[in-house]
Length: 593
Image (cartoon, rainbow, N blue to C red; front, side, top):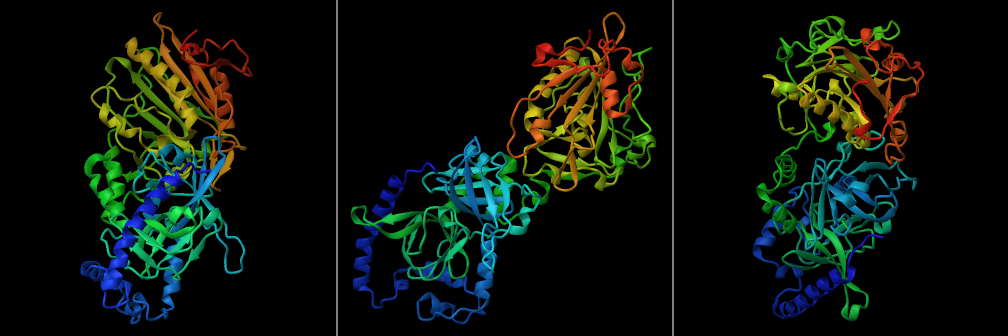
């Protein structure tokens, strides 16, 4: 179960309770009225009264306990707040469930829960936010939607205040958008609930379907950082929002207050929202710029990056921004070694996406070109020129990606494909490959087009395939070589259908062309599978392999004609069905015979 020092937390809560008990006893003796509200400061009363809706004529009487009447809108407001609340299912790295908690959305893409529920970014990475885990009016279970956490975008935690603030993926595993659940704004000031006032908690007690402890509970104590109340809670309620009668979040529930000698519980305790907000505000500029933007959405009500874009800044430039881009150069390797773009076979030619103002569907960028498949909404192939002698070191910027306005946006797979899963926006033309010469900075930016992205499992994108790319680029730089690289996915009719509209390629290929020291053209081909990685996008398993194969093998798999490169292949003597040479690491990678 969740690893949490309940004894330590309960001891601290009991100490706060006992310290306040003596003060409360004295206060009750000197007050002229029995109303608990009389013990509150004038400032807290003023703040609380400012939250009352002027149309609710009985609100003030309700606060001081003289009326139980509620407007019908009260229930509607409660249902709206309930949509923001989710169950937190905590997993370990092996996928086993270790416990449950509750969380609630407090800004676009940000969820608040307890530190002892999600104690670090690693715990968040393997866990889920589960919305609609509840019964409908007919006591039938609703459809639950599971969202991944994205702690790499934002994860802030504090053990003393027992809170964790974490970014949530913009879409569930089944494609439902997070924006459908909204968020409850947090008020940074104190005074949102007064002593004796009723509070309610929406929670997943013991990990069960969503429930509410409503109004038959009172605030009993208010401390600098914590508040006590009599509301019913159980294990699994940790991380629940404590609401005032105005449906403002008063506190983050986190512990029970044990009685003298540890016998039973005399109250429940929550962390005051004002304390959490003050802590977050104090972080100031210590966070990276992208995380500051997300946090401002909570502290200042400013919108963060659009939720639908998966936390990625998405930009579309004017078509004029692409004027004059030459793209891939077929004469790049020198006289007598022209390497034209692959020719699409007749069976796939009709699937080329039309490009406004360009023949053959060729999208030209800086030092590379792309031809798109309009059916699969991914590139048929990319072609890049690499010039090792003029290689530049340009650091990667933030996650800003571009739609290309020269083709229909609907023909480009955007953020909705990559949200809430283990799929990377894999650069087909690697970011560093075209980054050379005077136009290096523009080439770097050009690689961040969705036309240059293909869904690659993060293990594929970051391991052996990356080593292959490193080897090719490193050799080009080491020997001042010129290298031409074609890259693309293998499209099969049985590729996995994902989210009802995307087919995920199971294999990727590269064809690398260069001129050897003896002046002869050399072409080698590589094939990598991610099939066993994408069979289950939520829980990847098993090995995967990269092969060096004949160029002709790639031609058969893709219906692309690579022309003279087939004869420049050291494996050309092998039969086309040849499986290939397994590449286990960079030492096995070879660019020539």
